[in-house]
Image 1 (cartoon, one colour):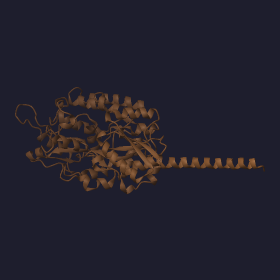
Image 2 (image 1 turned 120 degrees about the horizontal axis):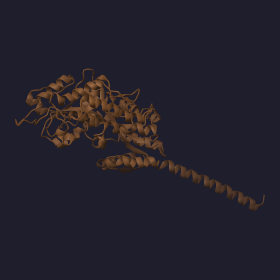
Image 3 (image 1 turned 90 degrees about the vertical axis):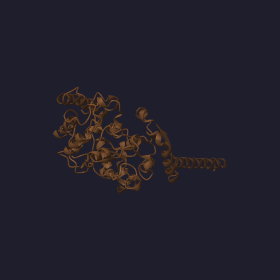
Image 4 (image 1 turned 135 degrees about the vertical axis):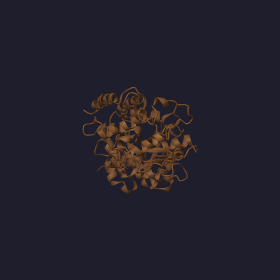
Length: 439
């Protein structure tokens, strides 16, 4: 072989080998430096999220997490745009109300294998994962729940004490509740107008469904996906509307228009209130130390057995288009687990990470209410919700409040509809929406 040919072959082999090493180095570098985009919907938690991310990155030097924090009012608009452009962040906050829609439209990564193979079930309330699966309408897990919201009965201890009424407990029935509500309704200054109501509610989902489920009823037939309230659900709606129309123990909605709905109770205008556990935070903020108050589970209805909790999880989800699925899972598991702290969860929300929820930090001794361990009990119970596709539309949530089921309940207690007229309209309006979504 000529010398020139030998030199050419050696150079060619050298260049090919160098190229292989270079490509290998690039691939290794890509594997080592995974960059994740994480979107959060709570600007108030930005600094705490950054601290959590710093801890995660220190423990996982091959992964970098870039945080984007968006105001809640803008969050869903912006993330929907990203979804339409197939540019979703690797990890993002997800509401239970969107789980079915997003999972069925292929916008969420299926986490089932990760959960089966890379999760310590003893560290989490696994019934929350079951709730996530049920909400998706599939047999797979498309989100990682990090905090649970349930509903509670809030009661004013000072007003109960003044009337000599025993505080609500697990033995309370609807009759006990109704009797207390009537006794606690008063015209304090004798001017002919009620100044203190026994109870406050309107057509809001947490105000109504809480009672439906405490009676073991349902509004939606999950087999047919129709609005078909059973007798137990109708019994709950009748019980509530009678508190206003017959018992005069609760006001119409229009009578409370001067209040934000969540402030009626902490401002002392009503002795009892049922809503989400997040109102623990609002009660502390609005009432301060001006009233003494407590929490209890809802009274069991005539057909209820206390085994159901009306609750839904806040979750983290992963984009199906992420290029770093393993890294995204590792971060999600950390952010919802050991990386979570109580100052990152609104008071009243229940972390799914058991070591945190079952710690002294969660109980917040020295603050109201003094029995937050009730929430731990509820976290372990079976959960039910009324979420469906287009839930916000038929339910009448947010801007659609007056147009859906919410507005029909308000119409009953405000005297705009009879009970039967409202139920007839509900059958038509709700099923129009459901029929459009479930063929």
